Image 1: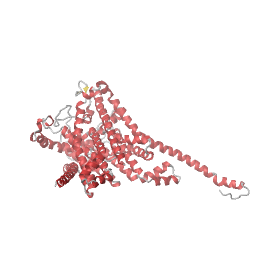
Image 2 (image 1 turned 180 degrees about the horizontal axis):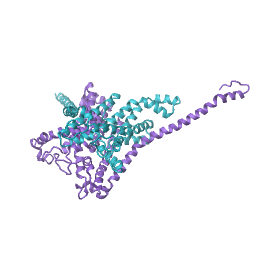
Image 3 (image 1 turned 90 degrees about the horizontal axis):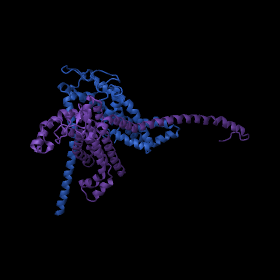
Length: 285
Length: 336
């Protein structure tokens, strides 16, 4: 009799714990649904053609858009990729080829540490190095700050993907008299290209939504600008500035900007996942 | 090599010279070409790899240099003083450090059970078909830009807190008698910042937890089940102890994210330079102080003080991240 009561209690505990784990999972998914729901509810109605084609207009004048911020984000991400992608891929190739060499071990560790560095610290770093000496804010400084943030992600995914290329392929190329560099660039990298592109896209999606590193580097700009040496706007910057403003009209624009931003980020990262299935949070853990 | 004219030997050598000689020369030339290109390739990839440690070093040097005037002027008092007065030019970051610690730890307190619980559900309980889509949705949280969480928090979370949650905690539950839930409910507050932080770090803790739980060897689970354990007893006694330090690593990784998170916190914490026991009160974090004041800073010393806040943040997150990586790495090695 006693044994059955104990069994009952064990069974009950198991059930309760299972239910709690289920509730935890449900609670973890809930915020995502809430955020997406409100984005669609509040933002979708403000996204129209004007939003993409027009410049911001003063409060009270209808039909304003974020054309300047959209071109700004594209330019910033372009500059960032020019800096972050070659360095990241080069470092990733090095890591894949050098296994446990002392430099490789420390680069791997420090890339993870760099990835965890707060973006605002990258922001003040870029300001001190690229804005303060020049005396004015610039798109280039913002792009460079974002590019630095791309390096660890691109590095670690490149390494991971290059390591999936069979050794036999590499050895076959070397046995046929291919030089090491040619083997690496003509055989190994193209074979791993899908995965490498995934890493680049994940990095791009991440920096496209970054605001903090841009606050004191590219600053933001109410006017149309495509100059690298001038301040430039970006969608996340505009969303931030509108969100903390006092006008309902600007709030609506902020929601619309958020919808466009999240659509951009999701298209890029879902595209990346379509190439190779991997988690967002795992980026490079 | 077969000599075609064995009698003379000379012809053979001539043939040898004719056929074989150019070949080694060509090979030498090509090898030299290879060697130069190989060296260039090796130098370039090594340089790219070396850029990572170098970059961290340069960041450390540049931020330290920028922070130096304030650090020299105020010394350790910078960390303990609550003054932030551009008029008298005295600066201290005690309230920002307090706000950073309170919001980060409260966020961990909320996010950890949910994240670990979700990870346990996904690796142990969930039906097979639900695993990937549910994990995908939780991971998706990590892809949402910080500024969007901030926007959502300003217009959805904060009003709910102000109208419903804060009065409920303070009056209905009577927690207003404690210093932690007292005072007027403005909305923007340490509590709001903690909640949005909890949502933002949840996917990181959950992803790492899922990974280390999945890495627990089958033999561990089977041994526990063979001894008659129920599923929960197996999880508690065989799975979680094995994954514990890895989960801890994930939690610390989440802490690192929370400490340095800027935009969403800046948008809902209220940005006030004061230390208040009440979670309903507005506050500051190191990151939000920088984001909020940097572009309006008037003097060199104020800029340097903000750089010094960044320096403190840099050092703390460096230590926290290094510790987290070490823990996760160690669990991965144990599992192998």
